[in-house]
Amino acid sequence: MEKTWRWFGKKDPITLDMLRQIGVEGIVTALHDVPNGEIWTFDAIFELKTYIGSFGLRWSVVESLPVSESIKYAGADRDILIDNYKVSLSNLGKAGIKTVCYNFMPVIDWIRTDLDYKLPDGTSTLYFDKVRFAYFDCYILNRAGAANDYSTDEMKQVNELNKTITEDEKAELINTIIVKTQGFVNENFKGNVQKPVELFNQLLALYKGIDKNQLRENLKYFLTCVIPTAEQYGMKLCIHPDDPPFPVLGLPRIVGNTEDIEWILNAVKSNSNGLTFCAGSLSSGLHNDVPAMAKQFAARTHFVHLRSTEVYENGNFMEASHLEGRGHLVELVRIFEKEKPGLPMRVDHGKLMLGDGNTKHNPGYSFLGRMFALAQVSGILAAVEHEGSLK
Ligand code: DNO
Image (cartoon, rainbow, N blue to C red; front, side, top):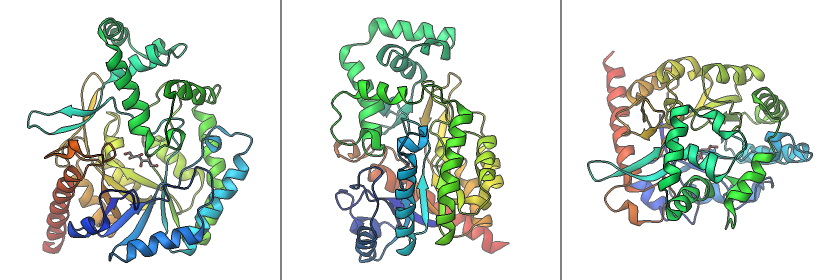
């Protein structure tokens, strides 16, 4: 597998010079300054590609070329936005950047309730607490009918939490779920969002009446339009699974399990219509057998996110060490090395350790924690390659 790293552009305090020193081969990035829906020009792409190349690295994967919200809910301007998407794709293709990750999660991308969950060894990790999330849904968003989406026992705990939660804790929960986790990856919440809860509710309202089937149809419409452009340039689009892989906040999510992925890959039968195999997202659903899915979908996987989670009986989950948990990364590396050697992979997320907590890195994208994870995964890769050479 190719060792890649998510780099947030020239403003990222983790520089390309640092990355080449730790064994990174390929860069995963985007034109982070281009507003959502606007065209990525050939010149801007080429300039960034050349800059990356000047460090002896290559721009391997785009993550993400964002799909505008209006394409997801089929707004009036979706065709214009899809046309822009096609132009951006062809400009990437002309510049020789061929793998493009995107997601189709309505309103909200990845969800965590705690970005600094302390572990006994003094490091901390990312955590999803179902009751706190339900509290956000029922008492902060005040979504109509939200309580029906949780069990009686969960609602009991939510109501208890409501008696004790402080204003500061509420503000922190909003900051975590909306501002900190979305701000750097989700076009809806980029910049200085003044009233995050109001904005969030406005976005939710756009999906009234859109169920799973409708969202699937909207994805199929998008793919039918853009895949021919990808094919023309020999490019591979790869959809990122939903994180976590189940419906949230009354929103449909359509990339959460084997059947969903089969549906998407069959919706447009082309190798350019592929998957980002995010082991972390998939492993956080107990319904997913991650190695079995890797075997099944390896042929149409064009990019891999290696991370793992530990899921608890109550539905909470925690990001585990890259050597543990439901992601079974050793097995995944075996599968992908066999089926698709050279596939780009990045370690995803990392713990906060050894002073990482004092830096201003994007949540989940610490330097030392990720470097540690990359070292662990590099060890797995080396061992698997060695196994292969013994056969
Ligand atoms: C979070 C990431 C996601 C992912 C996008 C892909 O850390 O894994 O934001 O990059 O959803 O489009």
